[in-house]
Image (cartoon, rainbow, N blue to C red; front, side, top):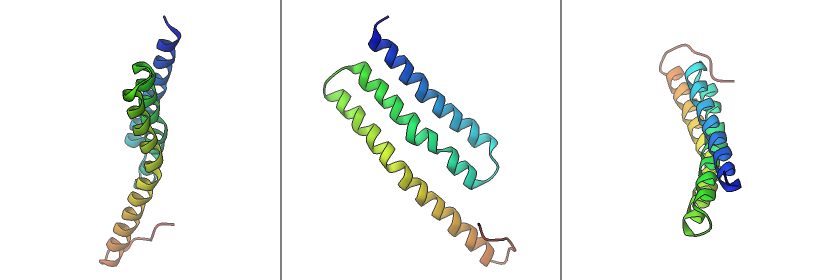
Length: 107
């Protein structure tokens, strides 16, 4: 087995482990805020590790650069998307509270 192939397998299994961990957490965790936090390993580590594995597997060239750009965009945009989803959850919770249902606002 080549060293490059071993590195690809390690990156691939690391990324897959992060994605599976997030999927299990989404099924187990009770509230929307906890589930939102469960997505962080998948978006900040899982997808970039998979893209890095594909970039190493393809070798030097345009394809590898494309995979690295996708990994960088995913890692950089995941906090922004998480904040937008969190704000939407807060706004919908506040609207439900104002419509007559007696619930406490989020902490």
